[in-house]
Image (cartoon, rainbow, N blue to C red; front, side, top):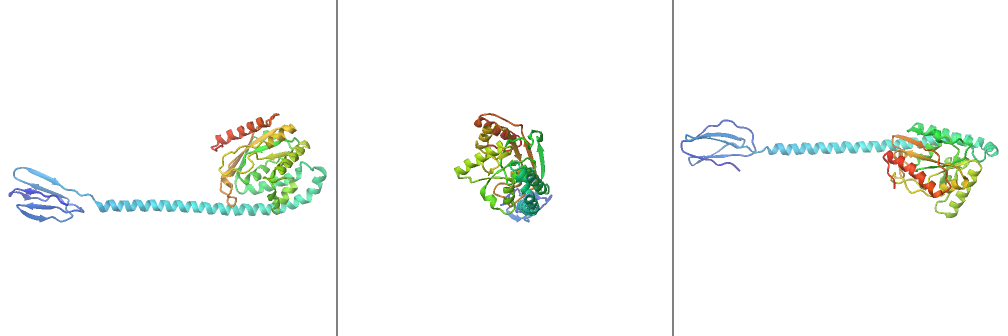
Length: 332
């Protein structure tokens, strides 16, 4: 496309300036047609009657196209860099996870031997609390996690002494929860599914610690577990429950079951709520082969007591839920 000008016979073209353009213009003078070069974008024509200035400018399409290509290339490069960063982080987490299990396995072998050596004396003098075994377990857990993440504990003053039985409850986010809680140095008996006891070294150490086995889908096993917990608390030992029953899949606090609080009401033992923050981000449920970098915080709340299991359950959950909400976690 061009611009067509018809001028009188006396008109004479006076070129003023020219610049690069992607289109061409045609000028008709006294019936003759003259084609201007395609790269002319500005021309000036003067007639005796009046001076007329015509400026014709066409957009630089090659510049626009070139800009789009550059912008697209930059976006693709940024996306590629982002993908590479994510891939590198995932690989680093997997390597860290492998190293974590290597360290915990090596440490467990030596400390398991120590557990076996002291076990006869434990059975003779401290059958229910098993303080020596728990002290060894604390060393094992501390050695393992100190190399991989920072641990902060708040509210240690709220922990009762080992000589006072209590029912401990906490939210359950990750496989790392057990390691983290063992560093507190309290002689509580965890409840664990029976399949874990089959793991070499770790499962055997759990047996020596007096961990209580449970078959989740077996109602009789659940009843036996609660009876054993009541018996242990009555004999001066403490027990530990994850009232959600399993690890949270989405990081949000789940519904609490009343078993732990029934044990507390039947024995008169205080309930110690504990909030775990960050373990689910380091090793999410279902991704036990990876270990992300980060830190973990444990908040130990004041003991609560009561005669109503339902009320105790609601109060303990509210304490933990409010703490999680303050730290940006969700609650079901």
